[in-house]
Amino acid sequence: MSKIMIGEILSNKEECDFNPRTGKLSGRYGSFDGKVIKSLKYATYMPREKKGDSINPCINAQAGIFPYKEIKKTDGKIRPAILVFGHPKNAGKRKTHWKDIFEPDRGYIKYFGDNKTPGKSPETSNNNILMKAYEMHEDSDKEVRKKAPPILFFENIDTGIYKFQGFGVINKVELLSQKHSSGQTFTNYAFDFVVLNTREENESFDWSWINDRRNSSLTTNQMLKKAPKSWREWVNNEKKIENIRRNVNTILVQPTEKQKAKNINKKVLDDIYNYYYNNKHDFEFLAAHSCKYIIDKYSTGWITKQSGDGGTDFVGRINLGSSGVLPMKIITLGQAKCIKPDAAINAENIARVVARLKRGWVGAYVTTGVFREKAQLELLNDDYPIFLINGKEVSEVVIKRMIKNGLNPSFTADTYKYLETIKPKYEILNRRPEEILYN
Image (tube, rainbow, N blue to C red):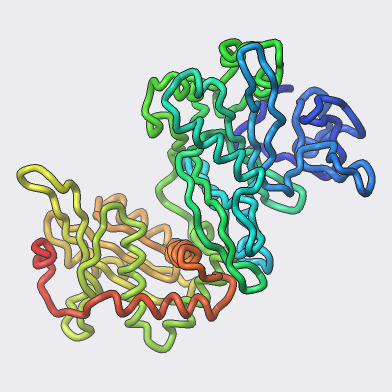
């Protein structure tokens, strides 16, 4: 059993039998989806064999970043792989004020490095290992890429339970400031990963490829034989990264339950609703602000006056092209609705925006709630060009921008502080939507 399915669950509730650093067996066998396994040479974190052991007998998922030890091959040293264990569910807890982002079906993962100490350099050993991998991933030399370590992703979904979310490469590194539980700030690296597709492998991952990379008797060319096709294409620069990025087609209509915010998103969304509760008109500023970060190539115009807005709360523009004889600019009419986070928008609510659209225009309906499935289906069936942005997506924008600005989403006061900065950025005007084309 050397293959693992994308999205497969691993349990770390039993001791494992394999030390990936040394290749030696020890202790009881590891657990895989609740079943004891003997042949699969990988495992997640297990307790140390005895208190005080300096070497953990298994992969330490709690460490976040787990690099395999470098192997000396006939044509140079290589690192077989680097495992990244993300804990997005921990966001907002006392010691975790940032949020790892796992969106493997869109081929995107964001992970915050392992420096968490104020006054300490972010150049930790594991961060440095990822930085070195980033340099290799960015190198266009085929021989360098052959030796570059693949990054393997595991998402924590419950205590002791991890979901395998595929593999990929690093495509961006950012140095930023984060807030410690003490209130002090510290610097750390944030890593953006591209998750590569496994279409040719029928959504499975062959761990024997990693074992081949650990085999010192195999050359770098030989260890490529069992690599996924997308990895080989990446090594050989055969395709652009976007053409081998994982992208899963999903059903367009989302159930209302799936749209509801959870964990830190729910907490922040509740803060947003409470902040605007006594002046819901001001939610229009956040709605327009959210479109800027959710709709590609969107630029904000203005907020409309409350009287005589004709069913439009804000006006924006989508810019498709900035050169050529006639760049395309698309007028976007926005509607904002601040409702309870578990309340639902129906088709009649959205019809108000639809009625205002002229040919070639698009709409954006932004709410703190969710959208009924029937409303989504009507929009799809009638081909109405409306962006539906629910409360969970709005909270995601606020969380990301707060972290970017050194604020802590787990503190309501910090959320309010961020929301206060939004209104002054936008004008309230009484203009015809067409005027956005000439801004």
